[in-house]
Length: 130
Image (cartoon, rainbow, N blue to C red; front, side, top):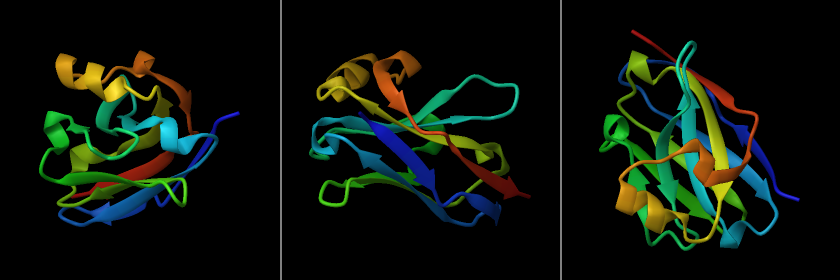
């Protein structure tokens, strides 16, 4: 049984930084992992994804150069370091687990889709004020 629990959300001013985490139970070392976000009234969108051994990483255009996804396979934790935050980054952030080779599909498509991932956390709120 896969369980994902996010933590580390909060409020920050524009230009600031925040790191959120996702603790995972299950075969973490075999999963591709990702962060999605959803703002009120908007669809859930992909933010970043990482392969099981961190050799492939994908970022969506809005966060490229500002966010860094990483993972610790010894601790079963996924991270998202968010720098130079903007008010438009305000959303609930979700971590998600997918199949081992999902990054191959995402990189070929150049897009992350909700249906790529089979397990989700409950989300953590990130609010960026101007």
